[in-house]
Length: 410
Image: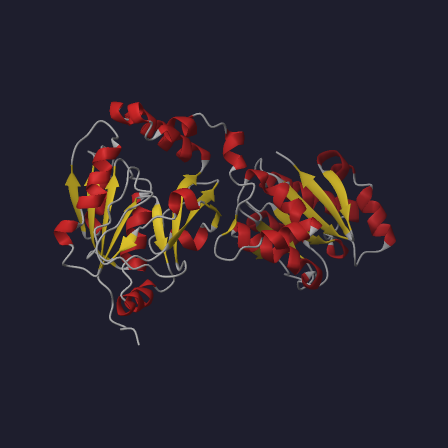
C-alpha cells in the first residue's frame, strides 16, 4: 500500500514581467498542488512581480538581463533545483504558463515513491480562451478554462521528477536526457496545461515582448523563432486555434459533430466567444428531453452558464421580461418556448418583438442565437411568428425540426 503521507514539493520557474498570469500560477501551485517553496529566477521584472509574490513562500532570485537567452534559461532549470534537492520529495520545473494537473497529486506521488518511479509521464495540452480571465483567489484556472488541443511535441514535458535524478533538459527544455535512477510510469496520469493563448491581445503582447528580447545567440541558432511568427498572427489566424479544440478533461467533440444543431451552435454562434451562456425561457424546462443532448456537450466544451426564468408556468409576463433584461447580459443563446410568449397587454407579435429587442440590445455587439420552439404552439401562432417584421429584418432564420433558429450577428 502506498504511503498517505503528504509529499513535499518544491518548484523552480523562470519569469520576466509575468504579473498578469503570476497570481493564477502562485495560487494554483500553492493551494491546489500544495507546493511548499517556490524559487523564481527573475530576469529583472519591471512590473508588480515583487508585490504579487509577498503572500506566497517565494524566493525571488534576480539575474537582470535585457535579453531572452535559452542557454541561461536551460542552466537555471537544470541547476536551479540542485541546491535544495535533499529537502523535498519532488521538484516541479516549469514555466509560469504551465499548470501541472492531477486531481489528487499527493496520493499519486506517494504511490510513485512506493514503486520507485522517479519520472512521471506528463501529457501536454495547449489551452485556449478568447477572454483573459479575472483572478479570484481559490478559483483555479483548470476549473474554468478546460478547452484545449493536445500538443505532445512541445508540452509532453518532464515537469515533475524525483530530485535524486539529474533532469538534464535540452535546449528549449521541451525534452530531457535524465540520468541516475530513472524509472518512468507506464501511462499518462498528469496533464501539463499550457495557458498561453488567453485572448488575442494577451497572446500578441507576450509574443511581441519575447520577440523583442531575443538574444543574438538565439537568433544565430534559430532558438525562439516562433515568437516572431506568433507576433505576426492576425486575429483570424488566432481564432483558427480553436477550430479543433475540445474539453481536455471530458472530450465532447464527437457528440457535438454528430448532432446538427449542436454543430450549428458550435461552429456559427460561438466563433467570436468560447462561452456558452444559455437563457432558458420555458415552461419548467420541458424542452429537456429533446435538447439536453445538444446543450450538455456544448456546456462541457465551452464552460457554460445557464440562466432559467420559469417565474410563471404559463406565460412570459411583464415581470419575466424585466427578469430577462437583468439576467440576459452576456447570454449568447436563448431557448424560448413560443407557447409561453405572451406579455400582458400586448399581442403575440408585439410580445415577440419586445423580447427579441431586449435580447438584441443585451447582446452588446456579440452573436446571439434564439431557439424559438414551436412544438407546443398553435398553427396561428407559428404563422404570426414567421410574419414578425422585427424577426425577419434583424435576424437570419433557419429551421431545425420544431425550432426556428434566429441568428443575430454583430
